[in-house]
Image 1: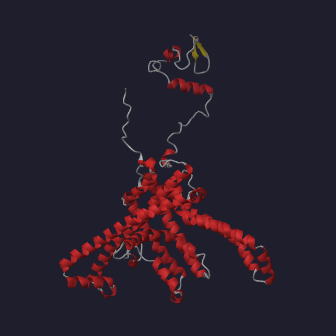
Image 2: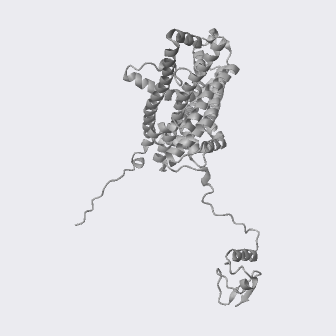
Image 3: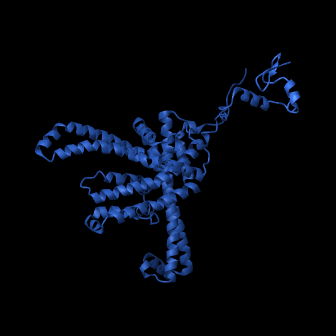
Length: 451
């Protein structure tokens, strides 16, 4: 009796538990290419808010509106500040499990709301024109910066997570530069629909300025509610689906604004529980990864300062720290030394903040691949490659302007043997290998040569 017992040698975890690709994002986010792109994006993000503040926000408004002034101050904070992505008081000593979860949860939420909060503030009541211009300028700046850098990061991420192949930084930048309009325009596309729906409702609001018009507005108020329903659906899909738009543009061949809009909304509304699971997993895992990187970077700074304090002495080092924190007290060589130390320390914190941004886009790319697999039944490795457009095409046919006799002559010349090409007489008396005939073969001018 034969023994037909099988031995289980390998489990395809990629097929059984596809969500395990989430745990590959940490190694991907700390790669040099992604870390370089994310650090540049993190450094450029507050620049736009500072420009917007200089263009649109007067000092009188900041003095009158304390809440608005506090929000403006938080937006132009450099990533080199203590805490990087979050405020310094949000990441302190970890004394309990709740402190650990709060610290782990804050960076990804901070990145997410850096995109969402300016848009949400555009829909607040009693919004002035100055504030609206400031929010809109900052939103467009963020989309432009992260449409380029985030698009390149997402392109590298979907390639590495899906196809499991490396992608050169130059190829990712070239791909992103050709589709930058789609990256910037995709989140704005639903807002165009919201504006079109709000326009007739605003017309009803104009009629409400008069008593007779108010009656008309009341009679047609059900149309306003229906328009509000459509606007709520558009904004809800945008609230949860905008990170998936980057994955669509980076992974799909067409990758335009309409495809990014349709796929992101489809995945959000068709698989909300799947999206919730992937989002929760990304939040927990990404938060713990950021917690490790944050404390590691702060440990680098603290150990360097601790070692220098031993050599300089505690009194001298305290004086250096006081002068570094208050540049107005520094002059001459101490100023140059303090600036150099401050720049180096800020660079370490900026790189740590860049890791947080890179991890966010890598997790967003992984979430898109998983939702596409759940909804469209697409394999993870079905990623469009720029160099595959011409890889499997047939060679070009250059016989469009040739006569049939010229085509036959070229075909016979390409299939001649070396012996047939030695002499015209020998070639004319031989039989064609491609068109054998019992009586002979066709000559180049179309006449049949008798055997």
